[in-house]
Image (cartoon, rainbow over all chains, first blue to last red; front, side, top):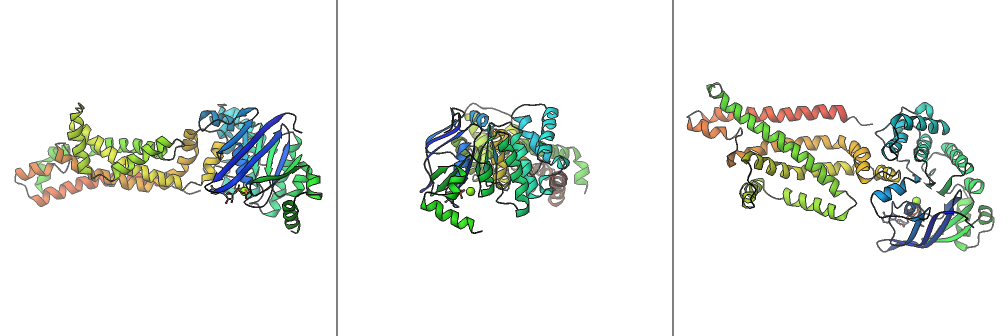
Length: 247
Length: 214
Ligand SMILES: Nc1ncnc2c1ncn2[C@@H]1O[C@H](COP(=O)(O)OP(=O)(O)O)[C@@H](O)[C@H]1O
Ligand SMILES: [Mg+2]
């Protein structure tokens, strides 16, 4: 299905002690594709997401980014990570830096851009997520939704080939979820390659090319969103959907 | 009272010796302490082991024993240095173990998500530590590091027993000259107070400047 694979996971396995959290994971994400990962809590979605940029090392299997296997910890890995942005559930903005400095830090220190150039580009990105007016504030002065939009701008500032989202709206008050989802929708329309762990079905239906359903560390279904939501094949998925659709 | 005015240059030399020991050993302890703390949180296993061994050995060795080891041990391996330098080495290495642990506990107050965000942006371990984690750890590290350096200033007295000129050692000369023991010690104590209160003041300023929570 994926013509031009950007992220490839082949037979990936991971344990936490005795707990087998990723079981023979095979997943290919093509360039420009948006893949939503869905599944019950504890099924290994975050671990899968974090394995892609090796925030969590895996024990066996191969993970390729744009054809290159993930290197071990060190400079090479750092270089590769710069190509894959990550957005966390808890935002993780640098608490001691202003919004603008949060976005500019990595371009200056990792990409070695000049401060002026980085700041100019950061302002463009903040404009794009609607937060230019808040550039000189500290993260703690912003709402959760605003912080998450800054976090997206910060990830984009590295001009990554792909973005990983681990439940980006789960820590937000309901009225702030949409402002973040809108930014993500726009990214999807612009052709960004995205892996998104989320339970936002509206987003999955409108933006995703595929939905990956995980349970107990396995990928149980990997299908087009409409098919998955209207006619899940597995009992686990049926059960899970019936639970979240009740809300 | 005239024990001070009569022996001003003796006291002055002693105080200067203590200040020198304190300053040089503090610098060494800070550099080594930060280095060992970064070793202890490094992604490389061998560095973590090195840091742990460093702290465990130095923190659990009596300082006097360490002085003996350095002053008597190193010359056996052909390392011959002025006594003052040996004393700085012993004091600095010993104190670095405590600085390391203060810094490490400061690092642990910074949420892990901060480091993860930095790494996910492609920062190396060194960049993550120096640009994101340590600046946020700094605030909680200032008070314990201040206390540790005050302890260092007082511990420098041990060097006097090893023929290094420092404040406490002046009492021997004064005693031989027949001055009152009590007054000799009072002025020695005042000398230590000058040093330790200066350290306190410096760290109070640092805390005011950097310790503001955001
Ligand atoms: N650092 C860790 N140490 C031990 N167990 C962990 C760790 N992180 C996650 N787990 C466990 O691994 C399983 C999968 O976790 P996770 O990937 O976070 O699931 P999800 O994101 O789908 O809720 C869970 O059972 C969780 O308790
Ligand atoms: Mg999770």
